[in-house]
Length: 518
Image 1 (cartoon, rainbow, N blue to C red):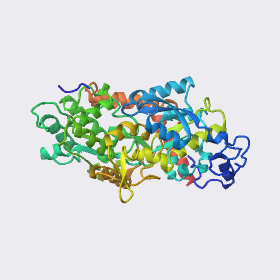
Image 2: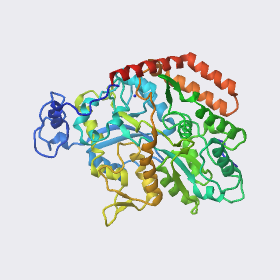
Image 3: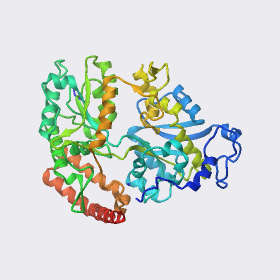
Image 4: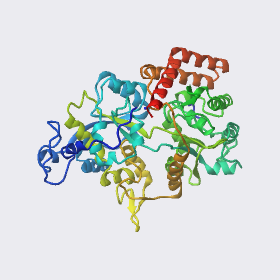
């Protein structure tokens, strides 16, 4: 049975007079005395003294990735060792993470480091002064300051930086699919909505796994399918030639959901739902459960982060040793087009209610910087030598137990700052792993930016989440047949009257203001 289912940029070349602060902020290994940046300097005694040797206890909230690692696991202990910290981790289920963060912010009861997303409510929290501004400090941290300025530009709020991004590729989306199913059905990768319909239908009805049972889906939807920067609908529509969140037409802004391509995608899913070619419980189906269907050999194609193809192959092999996963860029009627993302999978903010002094802020930034030092980042990216990977004769890292890496290391890697290949051993990978990395890297050439990403809109800051939810709910109703075309258009008009038109006006005004400065 089938399952029911953002202005002024932070200067890149930062003020050199701040170098004296650097000596007082970094944890150094020589016996130099840190020079004063005032009473807020972290170390005002010789390095190696008691204060610099005592591990800093850090309370941190992380999103659960897979199973929760055992407390004081070997991986956690190594991260603590290499960053001179003691971590008190609160693991929160991914599906409940954003809601839990909103409760923490509303109650002003937050850990020292909190991962948030760049959303209207969190932008408002930044503007209201709940978090420390960290932009002026980042020049003092060698690993953080070495990364592309675009990562930091993309999280600016009113020209200020209130956190450290958890770095990710700018253009990550690709088609991850069962190649053996596609080949066995005599089909090619879809480029148009008609192609997508035929492929999904065949993978659902034509017994692609040849087990004689009606137990597969071509594609599975899940309840947050249309939300955030990883929105399936956005990725899909951009691949077909549509805009990324917003388009600028003759100087005016239009939301993606008014574009032809986006509406073609909605119509596709409406048809698939009507014909029971996708799971009927998608509105309440969790993303982790959708992943399990792919892993168990019951789903055939999805739009996802390109690098996940490798882990999908690894997990699928447990259920179907003959199953073949492949990955290709989204190639549509206008060629390869990929929805550009913010370049982060979240932002670490430092709450003022929990962290009272600049010295504490700097210590926390030191932790985030030290995580990217060679020893710590090698653990995050490759795991433990002899357990998860081995060194090859040419000094590369080769995974020896990817399943253990996924279970024991990935929960930390996906929550902490790292850049693939930065300060770590180069990876000798299996072909599907190398291909996933190559596709994500090549995708950068075809990235379609969101023109409103760092524009200011008071209405969006105040009511953006509410207005987005209005549209998301309407899209789900449309797909499920509870709204017809006229009803869907009526919901768009309601959105405009409720504040959508104000957002359009405010984006246009800020866009014109910004362009005059250039």
